[in-house]
Image 1 (cartoon, rainbow, N blue to C red):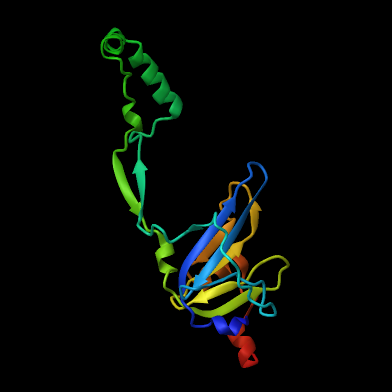
Image 2: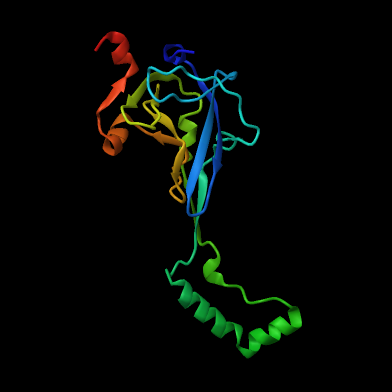
Amino acid sequence: MHLEELIGREITNIYSLVITETGGLDTGECFIELDGKLIIDIPYDSSQEVFIKERDKKAISLFADLSDQPVHHVNKDKKTIGEIADKYQKQKNTFFNKLRRFLFGFELEVKEYRPYKVEYTENRLKHIRGSKITDFIWYDEMGCRGYFLLDNGWLITVTSTAQNGTGLAGLNYFESLSQLNLLRGNDFAKLSDKKAGI
């Protein structure tokens, strides 16, 4: 399949399979579903064919839950873990708490670990689902995949390997071309420019 055939197609799902290796390299693979039926891989540049692939049964849908993510704030007084542990040990060893543990069988609750506030962060993957591919851009670097430019200005790519703990293996997205330029520079090629002979 040629890249030109992807223009205008809708991203209906993205499945991801990330394998982590502590102290080593994480690996990630994505299965991008278009129009609810076709699963493809992101090519490295415009000279490559787009591979149609079969989804790995272990891969999970990144769109299964697109609700905003809760962030629980604990430790309102911003004490260190050592300070909290010292305070807890002192309270735990009082006569009253020893008696309560003996009579009722439960430990003293560490109140600093109880959330005092919950905020929600936007699940940005909802901006990708239902978007249509409008262009393809790539950098002339060995081993780096290209980027699908979506109709809402977002870009998506896949990072196959990354240092453990960075969270970069698998799907990567950018909210705009200018955001990508800050990270990678503007020395990229565009499929639409190539087709126009620019």
